Length: 258
Image 1 (cartoon, rainbow, N blue to C red):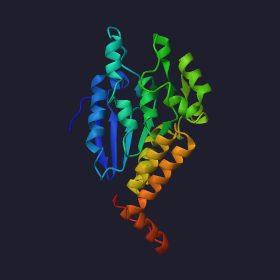
Image 2: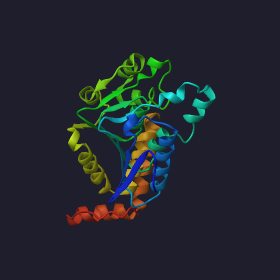
Image 3: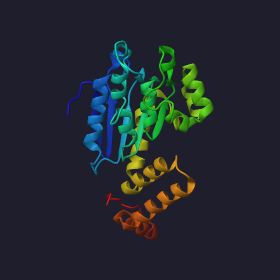
Image 4: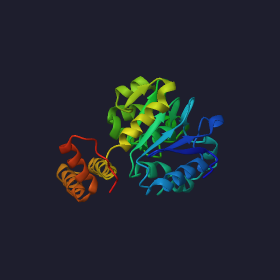
């Protein structure tokens, strides 16, 4: 399908979304939000897609929201925009593992989109921030919540309340990103990670992701019960039998996602 603000492609079991508003530093507008949701929807239940990459750059992954749309917006408009089914939550709730490949600015809603992904690989020129406080608002797409869970309350308050940017090295130091690479190696590194993920048993990956995400905010006993149920249910899959058999036979497993 052809889109106005994004490009999509498949590379074996990997689905790649490229943000494509370079003249606007990939600022997030309604069209881009809707197109990302549509693109993700098209592969959500596709057994052939085992990992997803969202990439932008080189100057900006996504430089926040298109602020021109904020001037006349009402509180009701914003509640609907960031309500159920929004791009950030939809990304976070994808069953497949997701990777944000970040070059240049990842600010505001762009930083929140990166945080909605399971992994973040940053180019050396990446800049992160939640600058919403500087225009009289606060993050509205998970910035106060996902950021806190990723880096802790102290650093989250610093970034949200001061509204200042940090570079890739600081983002790595505080646990916001998984790895830093040269700009010209970003796409290749993201694909390498995605293909590694694609080689794992898809149902196992899906349940492990769900157990981590759902258990993070639960009492430990409840969270371990979720883990145990997911673990036990995997013994009903063909992939579990293949994995165990391949281990015994000292060969590489061939997972089918069944």
